[in-house]
Length: 377
Image (cartoon, rainbow, N blue to C red):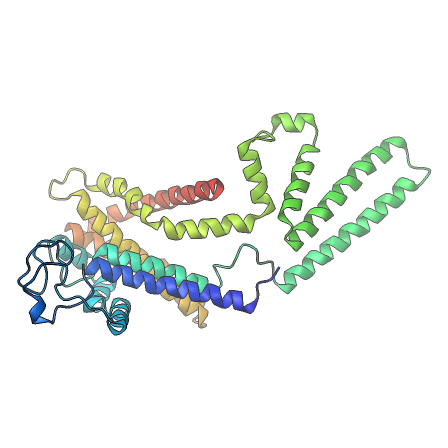
């Protein structure tokens, strides 16, 4: 059944909250404590966290601020600070990420950490923001939401057409001049149409248990030879999973979407082996360097998708955002490769070619992982 307005509002509020949560988490990664030490009388006392003696704004043992706020106003300040400021680093990081990605990656690897948002903090924020934007844009609809009125009209028209065919077959079967062989064939066709109509009506009404029962019954009605040759075998674990997906494909899509949000971090370890293969002979490059490269690169790609999705939503021509989508990712990767690893133009182009292939492989592996997780839930 269609969700009510209040349910949609609750879902949109939840996704907006996820974006704020991502910003706060990212801010927490950037700074161990969300409060500043402004009370001088608390600088010389035992740390409230580890018990060590302190002599400044922060504990030299665990890093916690010596002055701890205990007011709702300070909590609101920390929330707004985490969402909008990232300690001011975000405004230095984003221009570098978009226009000088190789320089940003190399500077961070070389130790310029205080100036920029860390790769993982930025990654967390963009993951939460991507999920929120796509959910608010209608791409994250509930698995129980049915098609729009136009689609429902098509479904009703299909059912009526099937009923007309069913009536014609029954009329032909009742004709005394119809042979026994033809009647047997008609019985099979009538049973098939009855089953199809029941399946369509169950899917339209959202009666998933009934739909699954009908589909299993239809699959078993194909004869012993079909059952013996089919895979997965009837009554097996994977057979039930396949039938449940056929009964409610939107539920699987919903699980894939939420798992993509939860397990997006898996893109980093999946990509590391491919990056290593392109530079394994260079002793000055380490896996850590590749991890920073991958994390910043994925963050940029997600931010680009967000911007292009918003552009499409407000009516920007598909020609414009289509060309940007086609040209921006390879150009960004090329610049990031050159700046991060000190490559020549030819070396960057060659690695860009292999990196493009690697990205396709990683995406296939990631989608396979999401599908497996969706089936196992």
